[in-house]
Length: 143
Image (cartoon, rainbow, N blue to C red):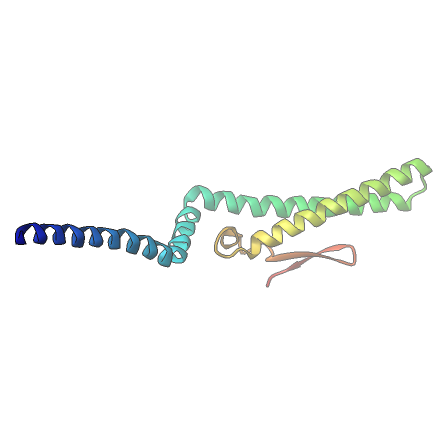
């Protein structure tokens, strides 16, 4: 009878240990999740392909935004010249649409530039940190 009690007690203790390890492992995983998340983000963002893609993204967005500004300036100059009412209306509609696209693109550029843990760290030093429109003109800020 004593041997059976010892075996039964050993099984209960063993089951309790296994249960404790499983539950403990689960809670440890939750406890280290913030650090593991940062590590995974760094591992994903420090691949050569991601760095190159991010680098190219900032150059492309910057050039697109500059192109929008040039197009707006050109169309505003055309508004100063004499033209038909239909042409004037078309130019004004174009300007409003392009200003909307420019504002959206500036917002995207700024949000990605501010993401220092991911995309923002791969913005080239020669590009501005932040863009804005001041008095209808594109303004660049370095920090």
